[in-house]
Image (tube, helix red, strand yellow):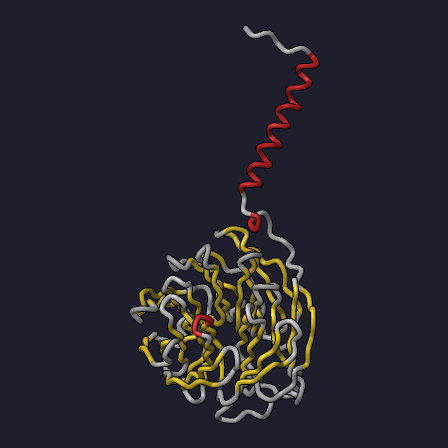
Length: 358
C-alpha cells in the first residue's frame, strides 16, 4: 500500500489539481474559434447622417470596399458616394427603374438592373461612363456578379426567371425559369447561386454554368422572403422574412436551422464574416443584429434604431460600417386602381445616407 500524504502534501494536491483544471480550461477556450467564444454586444451606433438630396426613390445599395465607393439606386440614375467622406463623387444616368448594382472588378465593369426598360446598363468602374446595355427578362430587380461563371445574373420579378449575361462581352448567355417571383440572390463563388422566391416562400439553388435549377427548398416557417446574405465559410444563408424572422438555412441541404426574430419591413440582409454578425435592415426604422455563435446557434444581440424607411443596406467589409438610406416623408397620395397602396410622399431634398459603425 502506498503511504498516505502528510498534511502539507494533502494541501498541495487540491492546488495542483486546480492548476491542471485551469490549464485544461484554457486549452479548451483556446480551441474555440475567436468569433464563437461568446455572443457580443453589437455596439452598432449612428456615426454620421448626411443629407444627399437629389431626385428619385431608392432600392438597393452596393459598397465597393476596395475602391471606397457606395452605389445607390435612385429610380432613374445611380448616385455614387465616397465611402469615407460621404460626398457625392459621380452619377450614372439613364437607368430607368434601376433596382440593383453589381460589380465585376476583374473586368473593370459595373452593371445595373433597369426594371422599366428590361435592360442591364454596363458601365466602367473607373470612369463611370456607360459602355452599353444588354437585354433581360421582364422586370429585372436583384442583380449579382458570379465570379465562378464570370456572368452577371438579373432576377426578373415580373417574368419569374433569371437572365445570365457574359460579364466580359455584355452578351446574353441564357435564361433560367424559376417557377416563382424572384427576390434577392447571392453567389457562393463555387458555381452556385441562391435566390428567394417571394411568392412561394422557397429558395432555389442554381447551377451558374449549366443555367439550371438544381434544388428547390421550402422556407417554412419563413413567409415572403426578401433579403439574403451568405456565410460562405460555414455555408449558411441568412434570409429576411416579412413575418418578422431571419431564416438561417444550410446552403448544402436546404434545412432551416434557426429563425431569430427581426422587426417589420425587411428588404435587405448582410453578413460580416470577420465579426460573424448577420444584419437585417427593416423599414420600421431598426437594424437587427444576429451573432453566429456556432454554425448551429444564432443569437439576436441588438435592435439598433435607424430611421423610418431605411429598409435597404450595404456593408463595408473594410471598416465594418453599414450604410442605409432613407428620407423624410409626408402623407401618402390618394389610392388609385393602379396604385391601391401608394408610398408616402418624400419631402424634396430630404434623401439621406445613414452610416452606422460598430
